[in-house]
Length: 259
Image 1 (cartoon, one colour):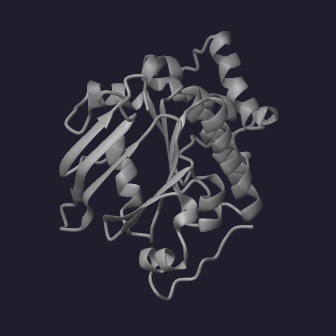
Image 2: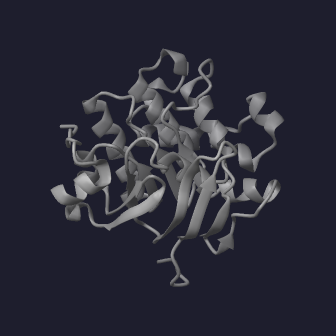
């Protein structure tokens, strides 16, 4: 709970229907307390990505309410949305880095919401800002790559740069959309370890979309599951037994984990 005793995030009856008629979300309701590591699971196409994009307003909800840190955000526009995003960072499956820029410069772009765009494009960062960005690269174990262009880094290294960039933003909430989907098993655990470190050591609340239940059981403090855009499960990771797994993923699904 926040200091006021209210959840950090409260979602009520959230729905999203795309212009082509696809119902991505239907009446989804849940809350997230400050300090949680909530994982969202479900088949591809179940609405997981749309949910995260509705939360940070990359996608406009069709209906419902989103309360974040004491603000109703589902109807905000323009500068008000950008203000909310200062407190709600996002990590994408495909990293969303600028390939030709160094790891350090990519991290520094995490403060775009706090400074003029021209300043960042010209690389006009103070020594204090650079030192702060470097500290987050150290946090994710990649400070030695600070001056290396991101297109010369491995996938796991790029995702760690993306995590450092998000943390440099100093968010209250970190959204991670399938952050390990394109990574090998060993690298996947490494990336998830850094997300857990941000959660436990920096106190940042995390909502993370994942496929593999082995990772869910290791990292999540709580789980929600979507199926065809509807919330079908909410509880602790250990409560997802075989019956629940089949209900969420289908009778023929197999639990293939990352070791």
